[in-house]
Length: 198
Image (cartoon, rainbow, N blue to C red; front, side):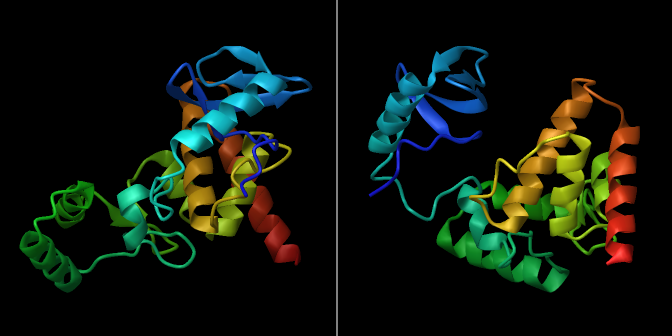
């Protein structure tokens, strides 16, 4: 039986037939990603509606959807080398696959992604380069520090997915100019210093 009374940031609700995410919870109020606030009781009811509507969904489909086959046990993207890329492309062509991973493979082959210091594919933006020096668990801690989050809203996901979601959330904060990139650099330095002390 799924617990529908526990609400967490990031959970999906079904409000008037539309899927919306919880962006904040404070006291008896729940703020939605649409900007609206509803009572905790309403949110619980909407959560139950969402879970009921999606009860028949494939259990393996989560935030990563079709990408989940291309992740390692930590949720990190498995780097492709030229040999693997060709083999996968041939297999996909035989199966008639036309999903988004084909475009990712093309972009990897074009050189749009490089490897970060930690070995993971890197899109080359400032956040990816700076956080690419850390392990996924360190990335999570650095993002929480930079965004001043008291808790990780993605603990229900594996470590790679947590890292990915927090990095994307961090990029959003930077885009909205909630703080500057210096905050990210300081958080990374703090994590590296903490790990050296240990």
